[in-house]
Image (cartoon, rainbow, N blue to C red; front, side, top):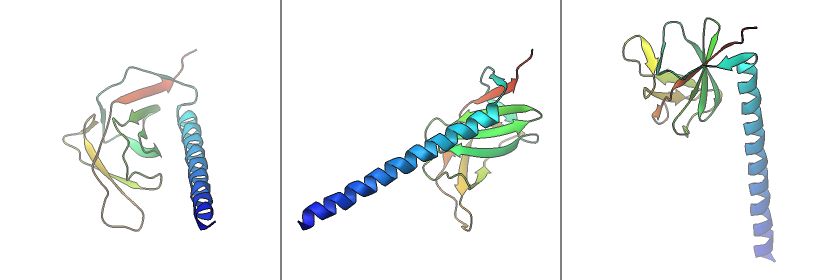
Length: 132
C-alpha cells in the first residue's frame, strides 16, 4: 500500500511539472508574438550595435529579444541556457562595439552575486514593421 501511495504522489508531481512547463511555453509564445506583432522577419544577421540595443527581454531559456530604433531582434540561442530565467539580468561579454553571434553571456538571478553558467548567443533575426 505504501508503494502505491508513493507512486501516486510521484505521478502527481510529474503532472504538475508538465502543466507548469506547458504554461511557461504558452506564456513565452504570447510574449514573443507580442514583441514581433505587426512585423516581418528579415534575414538573420551576425551582429547588432550594442550602444543602441535595448533589452534583452528574456522570453524563455533559448530566446532573447533586443530592440533598436523600431527594429526588434530575436536571438534564438543555439542551445537552451539552463540557468536563464525570465527575471534574470544578462551579463554579456562584448568585444568591440557589437553584440554578435557566438558571444558568451551569463545570467544573474535577482538577489544573488554569482552568475550562472556561460551561454552562447545565436544569430539576430530582425523584425521590422510591415510596409503597406
